[in-house]
Image 1: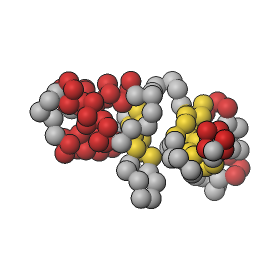
Image 2: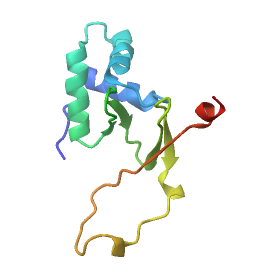
Image 3: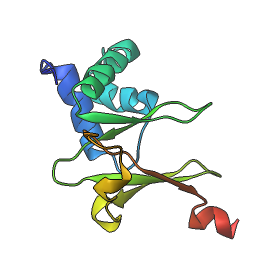
Length: 129
């Protein structure tokens, strides 16, 4: 893991992501950061997000044909995601609510460094239609 150099732009991006109640895309993050730092460019936000992903502070949520979404990895709050196939909404699922996979299910000697689990389905709002 590399250490991300703290700049006011990076601090602003992290704060926006920490406060977000959704899983925003870069354009939304850029609009929020511009409210604090009017001169920040979209390119700077993308480069900052890339660095934060490399550093393990942020994870990406990617769907074919959609903008990449970003999620801040809150310490002490590991979670997975449930994704609605109809509207694209993304919901957090507490990792403690998901049964652990037995080590015997993995290849012998396999070392797990991270777990990302996504549940695909239809959210309650879309079911009501």
